[in-house]
Image (tube, rainbow, N blue to C red; front, side):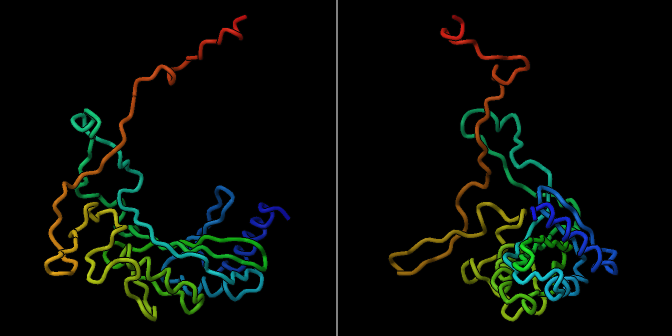
Amino acid sequence: MTPEDRLDELEETLEEHLEDFEDCTRERAYGELTLTVPRERLIEVMTLLRTKHTLAFEECIDVCGVDYAAYGNSEWVTSKAANAGFGRGASRDDIPETDPKNRFAVVYHLLSMTHNVRLRVKTFLDADRPIVDSVVGIWASANWFEREAFDLFGIMFAGHPDLRRILTDYGFIGHPFRKDFPLIGHVEMRYDPEQQRVIYEPVSIEPRTLVPRVIREDSRYEAGWKPEPSTEEAE
């Protein structure tokens, strides 16, 4: 059975078992299937995906957060003044939200070893209260994944047995993977030989985003341009 055949079979099975979940949507692209589930029905759907033998998604191989603030906007657009010279820079000011009700998403990557197929499950969360039920009770492997999403995005998982930071330092302020988190951070740290300890200080570097220099006028990209034939080809 080819991967496309397995996806066809998975779609048919999902359509059968999710008949009562009219608010769930499916999207198939690039050889993968994505199931979008409302957060209030996430545990119902996840339990079904885990326990139904015709689906049998035994493993949750990843859980990650996504911040859709300024989704679709280029981070590399700069002003004319910033385009001069080799040290161009773009200031990162307030980032507008495309949709506050769906600013964040939690994405789950599931694997069925029984049927040799993968499924991506996505649920959207609002900007003010990005809270969703934990799936640790269904897949124990989601424990540290959910802690990482909490640490980096500030997404909270109700019912998680030990929801605390996992990557950043003790007392860290903010969530570094959010689009509105300053690139320079809130504080900087260094070792003080006199006090013989690490100390925190206000950030002293300039807040800017460096962007690569782009050569915009190049004849190779003009319509109809062709390379000149070599001497051997001309003969």
